[in-house]
Every structure is written in structure tokens, then in C-alpha cells.
Image (cartoon, rainbow, N blue to C red; front, side, top):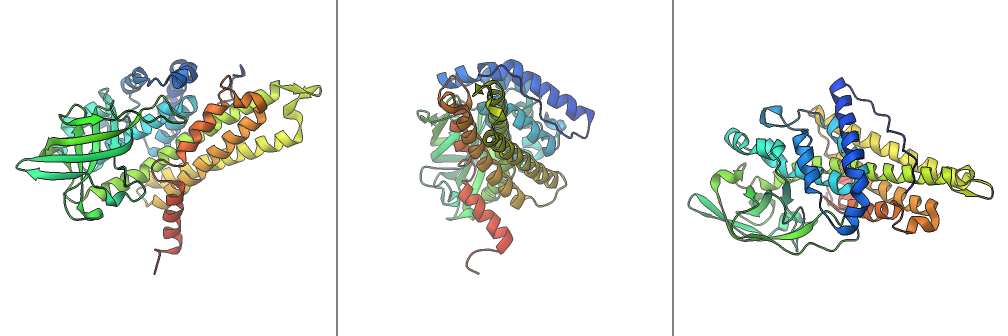
Length: 390
């Protein structure tokens, strides 16, 4: 890895509080996260102590109300925090995004009593969440999920299997979408399930090409019982809650993607300015300079796109189309930039001695999670050209 310190990203932050927050995040990222990232990813180690530190620092509930332990920060600020964390280590940045996604249902649709009881621990009490929508036979077609919750007096009995669950097996709580009624999206309800519930278990974590430190596993519900006061929203409202959560979650993925891309660009520039061939730094050669210029331009465009979508969300305006655009553009950018970074480093880029190859492996998953980029194109086209088959 290069010993050249990257230049900090120039950010427009509206308040002194936001500037102080980003400075704190950078300090934590540089001191506690980045130095151990390569070693711990290679070992497949999940940094739970980092998430404890983030919780103690008020960074696990940033976009939620301070009344319940959140940070009262606009999404415009929260997403830039995610970018900084992901640049240091994607396992951490994406983990914070998933935790925020898992907390959304209760924060946005829970009753006052539910919020008072559960949100303080979820947002600032050291708990870690997971979001359970996908299943082995329903990924992109999430409305066809089969996990079922059956009413039994004042309880619900949940049976089924969820797949591709980030933090599966280590989460303290799971936001679970289960079928309580008819087939299709109107028969799905959301539940808050404690991680130690009887009958809940996790499969062996998936062996992934990247993000090896972040456990991804199937989660099995074998007659898991939860009381009705852990049902979030009305019966049949779960799929609408899930989609609303994903609109915001896609912005989190977009910000993480730009973080990974920025880290790859910083590494490529550091290498190119130090590596000499034919008597001068390779950064002097026009072919590489043009590559670096394109990488930087696409990163700035992606950052502007996710921030524009965040401002719409903060203003209470529709942002689903822009969230899909941001997720699509930013994750495609991350894939292109990390590929180019490996190319600039040449043979060294293909070795684990430099982080470029890890960035490339990590970028790929961002084009898949929380709605593949093919799904994002469908969402965007539906907004622009209207529904299919009119």
C-alpha cells in the first residue's frame, strides 16, 4: 500500500455540527478502521467492537429522531458519513447502512409505544440489526416470498427461511417480512424479531469473493413466536414498508459505492505519482492521466447524484427515481473505477499487497445488493416512460 496520504474530499456542509461530525468520522476511520481492514478482511473477521464504538459515538442512528436516541441528521449528512466509513472499510460502511435499513420500519411505522420500548437500544444502545426480505426463491421478485406468520392468539408463529442476510447469525434484532395473508404484495406484514428468539438460527455464512469480514447467511425461522406488539404497522402493510426502506437503503449503497471508488482512486493516484518508468512518474503519461481524470469525474458525478436524491428526501419530496439512479450510477462507477485502479497498478494491482484488488472484489457486490442494477433500470424506466404493458 502507498504511504501517500489521500487528499480529503471537499464537502459542502451546511452547519458546524455537520463539519464536526464528519471530522469525528474521519478520525475514527483513520485510527480504528482502515489500519486493520486488509488483515481482518483476509481473515474473515467481523469488527463488532467497531460497531460498538460507532454506537457509543452516536453514529448508528444518525438519520433518526433524537427523541429515541438518533442523531437528527439529514440524509445529506448521514450519507457522507457512510461514504467516509466505506472508504476505510466497506464491511463497516455497508454494515451501518444495513443497520439503518433494519431500523427504518420501526422508526417510520412503529407505534409510539414500540418506538419508546425498542428504538433507544437499536439506535444508540449497542444493538446491531439485520433486514430480512430476500429468500432462496425470491430475490428480485420479493413479493413472492414464502416465509409465513400465522396468528395464534396474541402471538404470531413465523416459519420460513430468509437468504443473503447481512449480519445473519450475529444481529441482535431482525426486521422480518412474512406472509400473513393472500399471495402477492398485499399479504405481507413486518415484524421485529429478537436475535435470541427460540427457533431462530443461521446457516453457515456464504463464502464470498469480497466483504469476507461481513457475515452473509441464511436465517431460519422454525416456529419462531413473537407477540403481536412486535408487529410493525398494519397487517398487509409490510411490503410497502419494505419498499420505502429500500428507497432510502439504495442511497446508502450509492454512498458506500462512492466511498470504495474514492479509496481506489486515491490508491491509484498515490501509486502513479510514485511509480517511475522511463525516467519519470507514470502519472506523467497521458494515457494514465486521462484514466485518472475519467475516474475522478465519474466519482464527483456519483456523489452529486446521491446528494441530490438525499436533498429531495430531506425536503419530503418523492425521491424513488433519483434513489434508483444514484444506486445504478454509483455502483457502476465503483466497478469501473476499481477495475481501472487495478490496471494502473499493473501487476501490483493484482496482488493482495495493495488494496486495489480488494476494492475491485468489494465493488461487485454493490451492483447486486438491495436491488440489482437491472432492477434499478426497470424502476427508472417505469418513472420516466410509465408502467410496462400500457
